[in-house]
Every structure is written in C-alpha cells, then in structure tokens.
Image 1 (tube, helix red, strand yellow):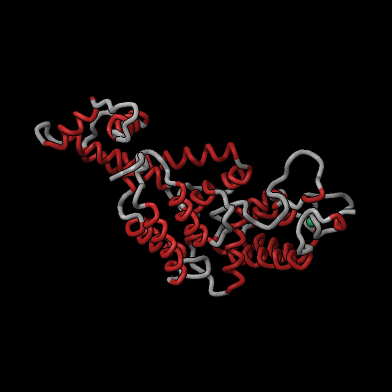
Image 2: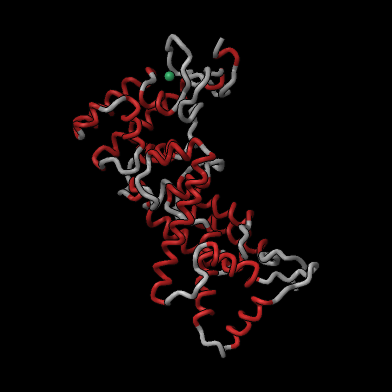
Length: 347
Ligand SMILES: [Zn+2]
C-alpha cells in the first residue's frame, strides 16, 4: 500500500539503481564521445534507458518530475557527449535532440486519456473515468485523483480537451512533444547566457548535425569535436562564456596573451583574437577560406560563429577540430593550474 502521495513510492530506489547500472553498461558498450557513432550510441542508450530502466512507468509521473531519476538520466546523456556534470540541461537536450522525460510522460498520459474517451460508454473503464471526474476526495485524503487533478487539467492546458480522432493522435502527439521542448528551451534562453549563445549557433531543434557526421579515427580530432560541443554548451574551461558589459575582473582576465589592456577570456577572444593561438588560427582560417571563399570577408566574431555553428560544411570539420584541440592543448600549458583569481597573475 502507498503511504504517501508520491507516485514513485516503492519504485524510485529500484529505478535509480537500474539507471546507475545502466550508466556503467552504456560506457562499456562504448556509448560515449570517443566510442560508437553518436546516432547509434543515442539509439542504444535511449532504447535501454527508456524502456528497461524506467519499466514503462512514465505514465505515472502524475505531472511531477522525479528529480532523482531525471538527474541519473541527465548524467547518462552528459557522459554520452563528454560534457561535465554542471552543463545546462536545456542546452544539452537541445544539442542532442532529446525530449524531457516529463513531457514524454505528459503526452503518454494524454494519449491514454484520449483512448479512454474514444471507447463506448458501456465499457467499465470509460464509466470509471467519467465517475472519477465527479469524485471529490476529502481534504486529508492521500488518494490523488489522477483524472480531475492531472489528466483533465493537462488536456485543457494543451488544447486536448475534446476526444481526438485516432488517426490524428500520433501526429498531434509528436507536434505537442516538440512544442513543449521548444518552449522549455525558450524559457531557458531568458535565464542563461550560455543557452542564448547556443541558440545563435543552432539551426535545428533536432540532434545537432555535426554530431551525426562520420566519426574520425584520430583521437585529437575526436577530442576537437568534444571541445566544440563543450564550447557550444557553455561548459568549457575558458574564464568567461561570451562578452558582457562592465570592467574586466581579475578572474576573467585572459592569461594567455599579452595585450596592453586587460581582456576577458571569452570564446570570441580565444578563438577569434587571442595572440597565443595566432599560428594555429592562421592555418585553420586559411584552410576554411580556401574551401569557403565567403568566410574571408566575415567579421572576427562571425568567423567564430561559423566555427561553432552546428551545420558548417563537412569539408572543414577536421580543420576546426584540429584548431580547437591545439588551442586548448596550448592553453593548458599557459594557464596556471591553480585557475582563476590568483593575485600574482594580474598584479
Ligand atoms: Zn588572450
């Protein structure tokens, strides 16, 4: 018997433990940034994770996200892309073309409700559903009436109140999933500079095209692609993400070049301008210019945008990844391992 109104009661610990085991299994199966091609790794991981570890119980989320289970799922996705734990979830989901598990649960719930509303009135399930609509549990009741508390309000909020034709449900459900995920990303843009920057480098709400391209056999190019993902998602090692107003603080100062005035170590400075990487930049930019003549006339920041876009021409992929790999390798040698804020670095 349930002792609380937590719909995950009794299964949460089991599911968390299954996800922890799965996390190790998918790494062993090489579902990570240096292993299987990304599209295949995503398919394997999602098939195992969504259908096995969650035991098809998503319909019972009852409108609430189970934070601990969601955190385990997000950890698996971050490992797949090779980005750190602190990476913004909205950015991660957008990059990998994922749908938040709560939205999946909501759409499954709506399809389930639609199915019941479409069956004849003399069937018991339909009668139970209609009866639950009029049920009013007591104030201290632990019973959560999923019909009048969850299913009906949810269907009203997304315009699914009236029963839908069975032929339309699949298409409408897919459109709803996409629109819920897009809305989630739009809200995150308002709260996070890194998500705002990502939206400027993104051409689709599906998996970023550069991730789906043929994998490189060279470990430095594979690492370069991982670095591009980290830069796009705002989870890189540079001291700032993008430029902001105001004076430069000690912890933001680029330690790699010797410009006459303090400069923030942003993505645009490091990739587009920092003198420490002039040689590698010249080689990369010259090669791209030979393949894409319009690149030469772009402004410095637009050139950086070109490198970080999700659909740059395939022929310049290797050049971009080699440059990013070289840049961060050199940076590691230049920057004090103690990191930002060390007084002696700016005095
Ligand atoms: Zn610099």
